[in-house]
Each structure stands twice: as structure tokens, then as C-alpha cells.
Image 1 (spheres, rainbow, N blue to C red):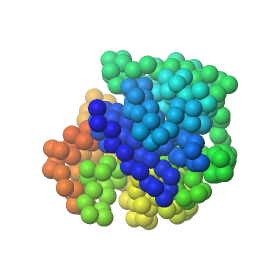
Image 2 (image 1 turned 135 degrees about the vertical axis):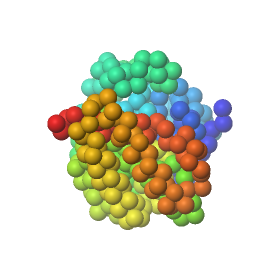
Image 3 (image 1 turned 90 degrees about the vertical axis):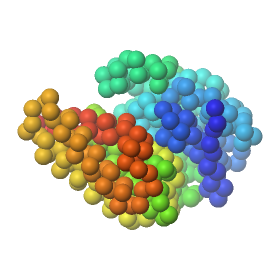
Length: 317
């Protein structure tokens, strides 16, 4: 299997393609500091060979990894932590206070994901979801600062996508690892200097008001770059935050238009309207793909965003 790297030399950051689901969908980032390494998000258990190969091909050993940091505990970000940490003897897991118990005992995490995806998909895509020993867990609340061999990483509580989500501010480069808090942006959609970015409104904790506050908090920091798990580095521009805020509002409007429909037709109506929105916005930004290609690449996110809107409507009601 081919592994793709994006090596940002000045930042001391390497983006690894986990190859989860498809190429260029889920990235894991290695932060390098004085011969030591920290992973930010790791994908699922089947991704671990790719991550370990990425270490060795950059002259790093398993012993060099000091931290595994997960922005939140959704399985495409944290499903492989239990299996990975067993191979990294010196690594500690850094996790949000609301997510730590699910890493130590993933029973409820597995049950929730199975409800969304189904047991067959969980087994196929995510593989083994193993517990993390409690004595190897560091809980990072809002404002927590981690001294990574002189490189200060600060953690912000960033709800909206999930209540167990934080972002990591790398003060050395003035960059932010945003997980899903600052949306999704796939490189296949890039055209010249234009990028297509969309929010991640997936179930079951999407909250549009908290999401917008999180986006504004990131924007107010004026980072040099944002590192998205889906997919990797974007030079920060104010237009990115503006696009995201507008897209959150557009998602909410689509959900509210369907709020009074029968449950059996609500999801389909939201999906229809949502696809029209996503394709129109991508097309406006010069997307080099045709609609069929775009639909294929966004199929999972489109489905999850629609489900998240339904979940939000039900909670609101």
C-alpha cells in the first residue's frame, strides 16, 4: 500500500495519510521536536501499520513517540489508539476530559458507533478497538499546556462537532490542529488558491451555535495554518472562517425547512437539499471534479452531515 507524506519542514510537522476508507481522507500528523515525536489523531486500527512505517521512514523509532493526542474520540480519529499505544512503550495519551473514560473503557464508544454505522461496517473499517491503560492517560481541559520538550502545545475546549473535542495550539508555529472543529477540506477539490471547506455536522452531538463559537475562537487567534484531520494543512485565511460560518447557517436552514416533515421523509429531503448546497458551493470555487466524482468523494460526509442534522432537530424538539 502506498503511503503519502506531506512534510512541512519549517513547522517540524509531517502529515501521514492513514489510508482509512480511501486515500487523502483521514490524515494523522506527526509533530517532531528534538528527535521526539507526537501523533495528533491516528485513524483506526487498520491504519497503524501505515503510521509505524511513517515513523521508520523518517528515522524515528517506536521509543521516540512521547504522546498520542486525539482531538476527539470519534473512531476515525481515535479508534486505533488502544492498539497503537501498546506498540509505543513511552507514549502517553492526551485526551479531552469527556473522552478519557471512553478511551479507558471503549464499550459505550463502540456501541454508539455501531448504532450509527452498523456492526459490519465497524468490523470492516475500524477493526479492533482496544482500551488504553488508565495510567497512560493525560486529561487536557481547556487551557491545559503541554511542554513537549520546549514546544508548548495548548489545548482549547472546542464543542460544536462533539462535546469531547479539543483543538491543539502549537505556539512554536502559531498553528492549530483542529480535528473536525474547523470543518473538512479535501485536496482533490482545490483549484488554484481556492479551497472548498464544509462543516462536520455528524451525529450525535452537533450543535450549530457552539460550532460557530468555536470557529470564531479559532479565527480570532489568527493562526498561521490550520491542520485538519480531513485533510491536512491549510494556510489560514479569514475567508475560510467566513465560508464555514455561512455553511453552518445553510445547514441549519436546510434542517429547519425539513423539521415538520414525517420522519420517514425528513432524512431524504435533507440529503437532497444538502447535496445541492455542497455541489453548488464546490462548483463556485472552481472544483476541478465533475459532479459524479465529487459525490463519490463526499458520499460519507454528506450522509453523516444529514444524519447529524436530523439528530440535532430531534434534540431541539
